[in-house]
Length: 214
Image (cartoon, rainbow, N blue to C red; front, side):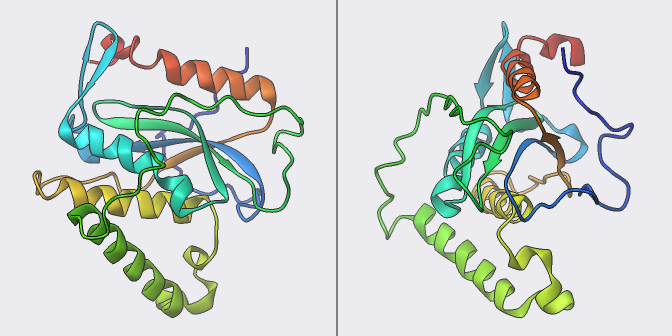
């Protein structure tokens, strides 16, 4: 069985990116995003089943919207846990080939939200998404302190995760003003079909193993 690659303190020191990997191309990633101080704002685990809070439901809903905002992204297995979330993100920028090198397709997780029914353009959620998109467009034009060298100007894993975290924060803070993510996120680059299936199983089993983490 492939051993999941971990880092001693979970997050890399000065950067969360692997210097040897091209994040601007195709890739499959196991992403983990934690809440600040491991606060359990997303719900609880009961008998191995996740019971999402309202904040957790928002985190799930906005995760499922990522491919709508970023068509170069597709989602595989994921789970929202009480104090963090895991997800497999597939980035296909340059070709239709499976980034692991196989021509086989990916099994998509069951989607409890109907993504074919767009929000009303006048709904608060839709306005928040437009505001988030407008801010992103402004930031993209300016490039911040790094100008056109800012990596967030380009389509990649970090850009879609940044958008996801920002949108969740806007929505969740309406009812939970103290809500905060950990400032970084962890990613593991999946390089084979075997490792992909290992990560899928790890994510599926996460709620059942929660009792060992209390």
